Length: 228
Image (cartoon, rainbow, N blue to C red; front, side, top):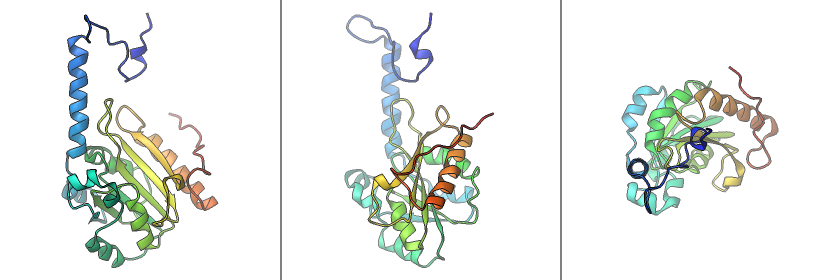
């Protein structure tokens, strides 16, 4: 007999005992919820990332700690004054490569380095941002005079996985950019999108963004399916 649960990680066909779920799926649900909640609060270990990445520097958003970051999303979209000066004092770059904790530093630690190794971005410095949101790439990119920003960031944890990584690309990053002007590749994790497929899509989007000089809603990801 075909079981729907064999084809999805969603919580379906869990069974029922009286008026409640059976004990095992109930405990598994509570464990998944706890892991998702913990992933939001796990701090980013920037020192370990620095040890794994070449030509990387650490920055910090305007959110002074995790509590403020979660309460004030706007604070995570801009660098603090010290970090602004750090970026201003660096060389300009046509591509701003940013790695930010987002809502799951766990995702960054598990997947960011492995994904970067699949890309040809060694010529550009990597900016590691603590307490950063997606739009922090616009701030960094504008300071660098970049034509393209690439932000690898931990996505909001769910009950299926607490460590999903997302990548956001923005042409001509600027503080006035909106989410509609970005392209996103999401769900990068062990049970989701592989590093190979994610890199394939990312390189395709980078090429198309540069060719058409735009990003976001007008640009659709239509890369040929990666075989093998």
